Image (cartoon, rainbow, N blue to C red; front, side, top):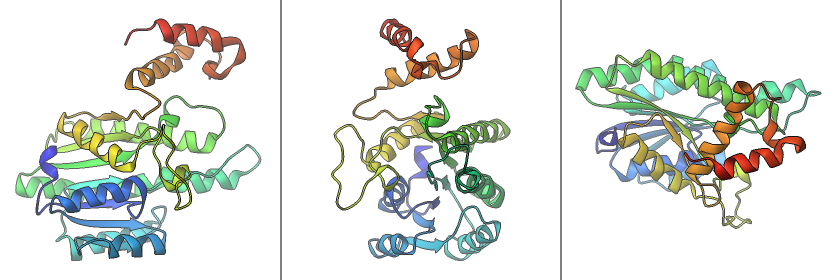
Length: 280
């Protein structure tokens, strides 16, 4: 899959005007690829376009809109010659949710979940045709979240959307298991300094966070190794710690404990002691 990042290949990246999406777009462009980014933010799109040498094209699109995906498909045909070697379904949003505000769930799921489903529906045939026609590799990268795996309390809509994305990506990988020239990867960033996590021109990056470029470099490495799950560490949380947290979370089911015990006062000490002793 590392061969995807090479001159002449093409990429479509949603949510590509900032953060991890923009870092990935720049990675692709620096390797001589033609890139199309979509975003809903006019100002960010203009900035991304002006900072490139013409290798990054843009289209404004709301990923929750099927009509907008038709426009993206048209742009792929006109600007990328109808080919996609890398499809990165990265667009996301975080709306604080609770049980009194149904609209927060709709807004979050419309973008985070249906933005991915719409993208697969609209462009998977293009990715498959691209790989089949030239005998070249192609890949689909879907951006998930650790919150969709360990499910920390606080934002049920966001966690649910990212848990659903994990399921969607796993099913897509299964369905394409007979097509080895098309890889599927679930990108799960750690703490990353982006607009979603408070990055702005006024804020300095916290020491514990990664830059978006670090996430993209890690993604490329894991793609070259043929990994589906790309669980990124950060400067605070190691790969080993992530594995222990995930194992403990699954243990709630296996051990018939209440849900989310890692955050329950009566289980916190037990969870800490278990993770301190666990070898992964």
